[in-house]
Length: 284
Image (cartoon, rainbow, N blue to C red):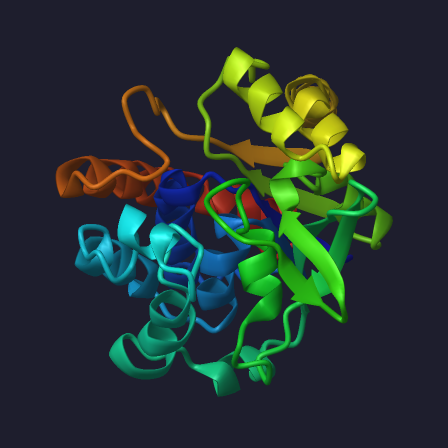
């Protein structure tokens, strides 16, 4: 049996998933396959390297640090990103809150991040390479429209994976997983909407019409994806873990109390369903 876990993105809402990850690490739950989108991938690598608490520390320590995120970074011609790219993807993992690259290499499973090809508008699934200390794949999967520049990999521009495959459980099954756990960052009943600002944003990408189309279609695709996921959940083919409530929680949240509360929700839910997941994965 091949087991898998899927991590939805959602920027700082993904601190909920970090709580689930830490609970699963305590219960020695480690799947054969992981796939993440955006922050789901960026934080998921710390789960694969078995570093509980690392993600929460980064968010709490640097959510209010202008070197980590802020408009100044976006206006910096050498950075052109709301996040400080060198600070977030080099200084933190290599100096301040060290990432255990060797532990990740010891993970016997597969780990993929979803990225969106700017030219085609289609999802691509790239393995995370711990020897790439520039973290190109992790930058690409997190490259939100406007807030990030295009991330080039082998000369091809990429953006946030959530534009093309927000919840890649179907990819997990296609890659041979028999049992899949899906960790969402929105509560039960949430539905995405196409807003006027989204349509305006899409027009800004007129040079890349496939990305513009992906932006406009994203909400509908996301909601249809939730319907397919619900069907699989009823059939007992997936276990879905989702937060209780994310109302009032910004994707760029700076309120540490809110961050801790959402993390605690994930940690509590991860512990509560740990035995169920172990049984689902055939471990007990």
